[in-house]
Length: 233
Image (cartoon, rainbow, N blue to C red; front, side):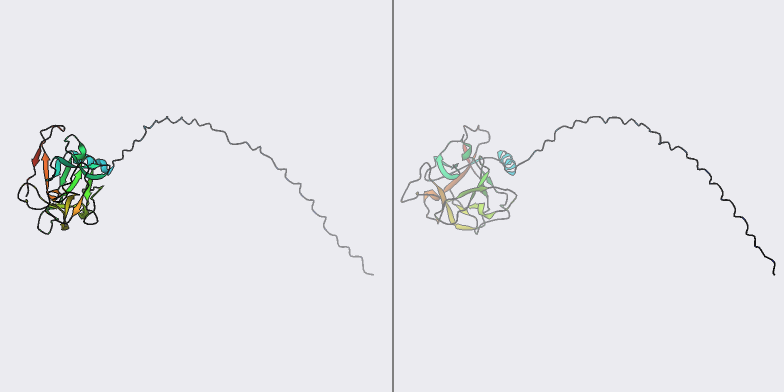
């Protein structure tokens, strides 16, 4: 018999005891108190916006220009004026600002009529508006917004040469057949009166189509102004 061969297995090694973990206390980060200075109170002044309207600028410009009076031969005691937005004739009253006009010849070198006479605008000092051509003969003129920096032929007029005296025809610059006309006047009617409307018509050679544009004396006060003849160039 074979001898019993006993294999001796080595005894298992004992498991090492776990190393006890050390728990370190977690401390929160220190709180740092920072003092923030209070910003100063800034009091701003209110912003004031100034709006300059174009018509105000026009009025201030016109105020520095010499005034003219416009009247026709049939009734030289009546002056061209604006009443309720309509161009009419009224008893001459130099203290009435609506009877004061500016003859603006800014475009006289650029625009001339068929006979070579220079163009001008008639601008009312009280309203700051200019006289505009109507749609045709027999129609009244209109008052419209005036922009001196904009060339608008519909507000440009011209004067003829003298008609044997100090009076002249006032025509639309782009059609000299249309003449400024105090309605219901002339040889047949002689009806020009206070409140007569003004428009344009074909030439009839009547005194209601013969006009004078006269400067008011600068040295005179508004309530005592003498007209002066405007020189023709």
